[in-house]
Length: 586
Image: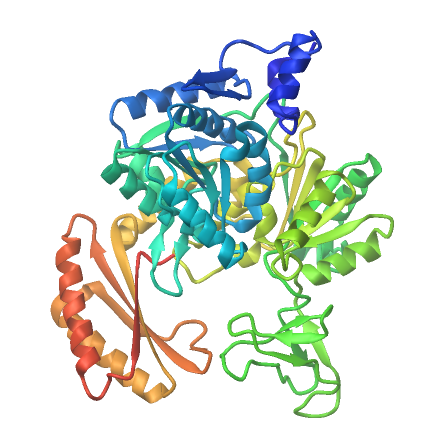
C-alpha cells in the first residue's frame, strides 16, 4: 500500500484514470481528504497535502474569502508551493473559471506544463515566445472564443491573453526580474499587472516565492497583501548543508585546480561515487568574458558597443551579447602581432571543459542560452538530467529556478563574488535570492543535499545570511538601508535614457533635460551619468534617475515629467534624440 502523498508526488506522470484503476484493484490506497474536486462535472486527482501545506492553503482561502485581492505564499525551497497552486487552480476550474499561471522563464514552462497536463489534461495551454506566430495567434483566437475553464501556463506576455472568466492569477517565483519587460516598449511588470488586474477584475492574485522581492514582502508585512508561510520542506526532505569555500585561501595553499577549490572537487567526487548528481552554477555564459593580449594589453571589443566581446570556443567566435556582432578569433594580436589573444575569466563553456577533464568518467551537460537554442534542445537536456543520463549539469540562472530533480545531492556555485559586487542597490537582495534558489535544487527528497559556495569574501553579510537561511535578517537590513537612502519600496524610480549616435548631442540634451527637471522636481533628480555600457548598437547613452517618494501623487509626477519630455521632443536642437522612459526599472 502506498500513501496518497507518495502516489500524488511520485506518480503525477501517470494519468488520473490509471491511478483510479489501481485504487479499484486495491493496489493503491487514495486518501479521502484533499484528493479530488468534483464540482461542475470536473474531477481532478490532486496531490495530498502535508499538515503545513493544509494550513497554508487554509490561510490563503480565508484571506481571499475575506476580500484580499492579492496574497503572498512565502515558502522555503522544496516546501511544495506548486501543490498548493494545483489545489487552488482545481477549485477555480471546477467552477468554470479561468486560471493563469505565470513563470519567469520559458525554460520552466516545459517541465511545469507536463506536470499540470497530468492532472488537468487538455485544459492546459502553453504560451511563450518560442511558439510560432501562427500557434500564438491560434491560441489567442481560441481563448477569445472560450467560455471559461481554461488553464494557461506562460511567461509575462500571457498577462494580456483574453481570458474572459479569469478568477485566479498565480505568479510563481514572483521576485524574478524576468517579469519586467524593459525593452522594447510596452514596458511593464507582469507581477504588478497581476496585482492590479486582481483588484480591477475582482479575481485573486497569488504571488509565490521562497525569496520574495522586498516590495512584496513589505506589502505582506504591512497588511496590504495577505500572507501564508511554509517554513518546512515537503515530506522527509531536509534543508541542504551549506559550505563557504575561500578561493583566496585555497589558491595560497595550492588547493585549487582550474576554477575549482579542493572542497568542491572532493564533494563532486564523493557525489559521483555514490551515484548522485551535481549542478554547477556560473552566472556567465560562453567560454571566457573576453580575450586579451598578454604582451600589449589589447582587448577585443565590439565595434558598435562599448563592451568586450565574449569568447565562445565551441563556435570559434567572439560574440557581443548586446548587439549580436560576431567575428573570428584573431590568430595573432591585431595590435602588436607578437602573441596569441588569451581567454581571460571563465564562463559555463569553460567549466564544462574543465569538469570533463577532471572527471573523465562523468557525463556532463550545459544549460544556458547558447546551448538551449530551441525548445527541443532545452527539453532534451532537462530530460537527460532528470532521467539520470547526465551526471553533472553546468548552467547559468536557468538552472536556479523551479527545477525539481530527484537525484541532485550537490550544488556548486563557482563564483559568488560577481553577484555580490554589482553597482546596483538591489545587488545584495538579488545575490541572496539567486544563491538561495540555486541551493534549493539540492536534496529535494529523502537525502539532505550539500551546497558549496566559492567566494573570495566568506565574511560577507549576505553570504552569512544565505548560510543561515535568514531571509528576514537580509530583508530588514536592506529595507533599513533603502529607507535611509530613499530607494524602493520607499520611493518610486523612473529611469530616463537618452540615445543618439552623436555623443556630444546626447551630452547636451541630457544636461538640458536635467536642468529643466530640477526646476520641477529639485533634488529628486539624480544625474546625468553614463551607464556602465554607454554605447550600444552605435548609439551613445546617458541616463537620469527620478525618485518620487512613496505617498506623493504619481499622477502629478507623471504629468510634470510628460510636459518636460514633450518640450524636449519639439526642441529643434534635440528632437532627433531618443528618450526612453522606464518606470520602476529592475
